[in-house]
Figure 1 (cartoon, one colour):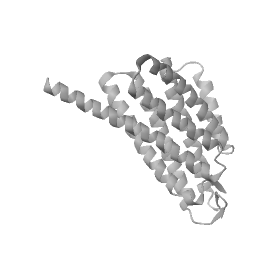
Figure 2: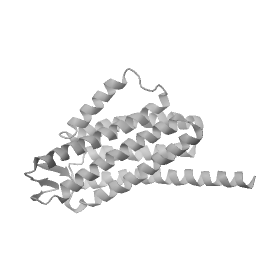
Figure 3: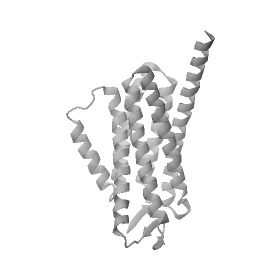
Figure 4: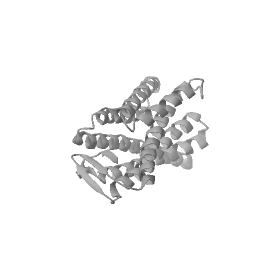
Length: 235
């Protein structure tokens, strides 16, 4: 038996949203990697790795939902929940592992982004934190709100760090990142209440908006890079 808290009318749309989200996150990772190669700034590398982990999480959930929604052995709609019965046990295993990896890589990505400003690398508390991330991801398959609460707490810590950074540098890019993380936090709050069908769709939409803000940041950075190259060329 498989259960996904998705309104019937939202089936497929959420997969498209997650595909678009993956593309943005992966593009952000590539941009951070290029910046690291040019500047050797490890912060760029780590934030890129954080978003890359979240991008991988999107891939896992896309593959899992495609199996869930389009496996037509026997499907019965019950309210806003999709329940699919399949005698093939390997598909059940794929389902649970897929959503587990989605939750684990999302939390790992957020944790990496949170740890960047400390510049301490892997400390003694890393393994303890990693253990709790696994627990949150594992039990998040049965108590979905546990995963979203953990993600929300990490996002609050991230916002606190970047708020301090913004107070120091007053950078427009940092402000844009703050807005993106704030929207992502709002989506997690709504996801906690997503047993109400319409709220799941709203949460997915707000999460998409947060990634669109990241896309705007990517465009701004690329345009700045082009202008900088043009100035060098003119000189």
